[in-house]
Amino acid sequence: MNSIVLFAHTPESEESISGTTGDRLTFERRETVYPGWIWCTDVLGNRAWVPEAFVSVSGETCVLVRDYDSRELAVSEGEVVRILEKESGWAWVVDDLDRRGWVPLECLAL
Image (tube, rainbow, N blue to C red; front, side, top):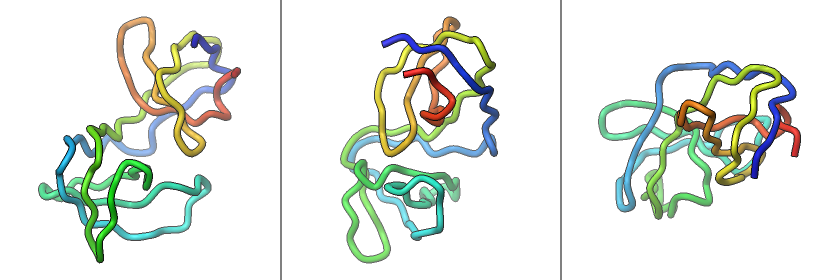
């Protein structure tokens, strides 16, 4: 589904997590504007938000139940993106240059 960007979005950090099904992460629950996300650290020490729906939690660790990339995408007002998936207040999108990443839903015309 194509969507117009209503408000520009700039990622808070360049740091991200990219993993495949079965990868183990440590996590902590933090206050967030977007319920359904947990703060995770991978084996290399990279930290990022991960949808809790994408992991199986056990004790102080969790395991990815699907492939995941936490990269956020910088978008500009008026840009057109294609929404590939929605999750807990965010959308995984692709732009005209085939760049992919997460953008908050409130930035997009749905």
